[in-house]
Image 1 (cartoon, rainbow, N blue to C red):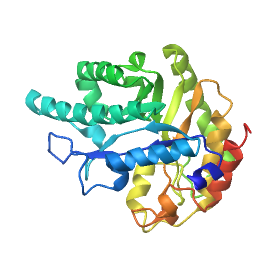
Image 2 (cartoon, helix red, strand yellow):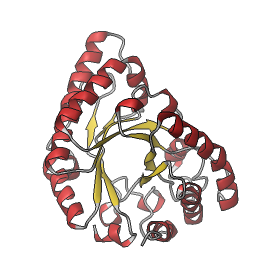
Image 3 (cartoon, helix red, strand yellow):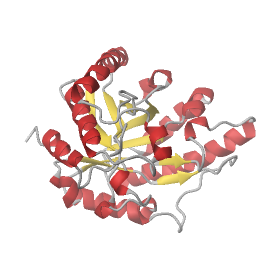
Image 4 (spheres, rainbow, N blue to C red):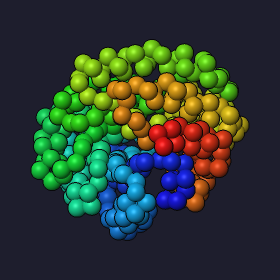
Length: 294
């Protein structure tokens, strides 16, 4: 927490993962083999430490499906859908109770479940109602950058949440001017969407790897981490351009940087090439923007 407050951040996002096996129809969570921060004792203690540091919190439980993107989750029969949905509701309502008991300010009840929310919309509206019975804070959902217009239940929740990995510039070291130019049409489109729905837009995730080409297709760069060169300037430029583009926009509620490691040690084993800004040029960019309101 001291390192987070040092960059002047006012909020943190906690992400306790649940898991769905490929071709599985249940959600696995609260297992002893999971990371400490994904189990109730770790979540509660992290919330306590965050509040002690005067940080506000978004609790963002989300699903990892090994070898597949969760947005492609799809079942061919109603029985499998209902089995998964029952299990997912248990997971989300379990987390919502923790959020309520510990006065968490914001709860994100789903991330990038692209097909599921389209094909099973009544389930999601019902789940939102069930969450509201338990949790009294603000609600959001994290849509992928390319499908936020297809989410059917923005009217039921408090913020339009977007995983903001918009592909912008396909160059090794993206430059500020070009990045801002590429953000311009996106910014205008988001503004119209916000106005149409009468809700602020929240970047439930945003970030860039400290690698060549970081401001383009992050999901492709992730597959080539080992052979891609470190590029702290590109990462810093990309973050700076994002804040420059959105900081003064009233429809923008802010965002949550992906991601921040305890002691700067990523479990993937390559923090020097990961999304984290810790100990990199990008950290100075965060301090500059997060400190503006002081």
